[in-house]
Each structure stands twice: as C-alpha cells, then as structure tokens.
Image 1 (cartoon, one colour):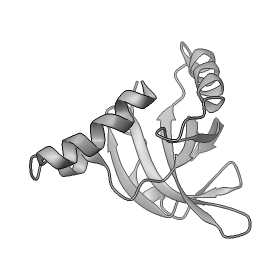
Image 2 (cartoon, helix red, strand yellow):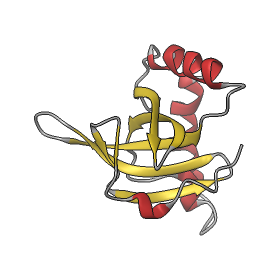
Image 3 (tube, one colour):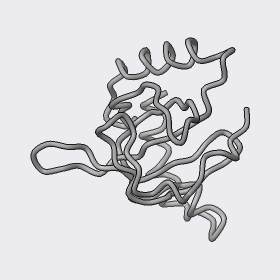
Image 4 (cartoon, one colour):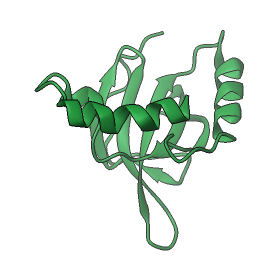
Length: 129
C-alpha cells in the first residue's frame, strides 16, 4: 500500500462532494487524517481518514467499516460515513469518525499518565471491550 500519495497539501479539497479537508491532523504508513466538518445544523467537527484503495482488500475494508458503523457504545468513537473517492486521480477509501479533542497517542510521548488518569481511562476501556 503506497500512502505517499496522500499529502497534507490536500487541505482545501473536498471528499465525496461533502467533506471539506480543513486541516491536516497527521499520517502514518496506513494513511492520512484530516479535520473535516459535517454539514447540517450546528455543524460538527469530524475526522476523515484517507487510505489508498488497494484492489485486493477494498471490498473487505468497506464491509468492515459497514459492520463497524452499526456499533454503538458511549465509550467508542462512532464511524459516521465511509466510502471511496478520487483526489488528483488517486482512488482512495475514506472513513469519517467523531472528532476527539485529545488523543492518547499524543499525550504518552510527552509524559506518563498519572495513576488517577489511568484509573479514569481503564473503566471506560474495559466497559467498551
């Protein structure tokens, strides 16, 4: 899977004619993530992940996202939309999820969690599992 085509300079583009790429949030070898906004009353921030559409696993990934979008739990981020699109001729898959103001993976490199923070975190995680 070649993710090098997914670039931060795509800010300003629109995915599926309804999800504007507002800000680059980051990327990895799996894809790139942007801030987007859901249309409608009281517009809501969301995160949109873009990954290359590899021919071998497109259908299985879309099926997995369809199954995940049916899940509902107060301690899980909801998968709101998913599908495929093209940007600059590149076929991509996208998933749109609720947006989190804080992400654990951004905190841990800077400092360890306190015992109280771990306790606060573990109950919701165990409940979701």
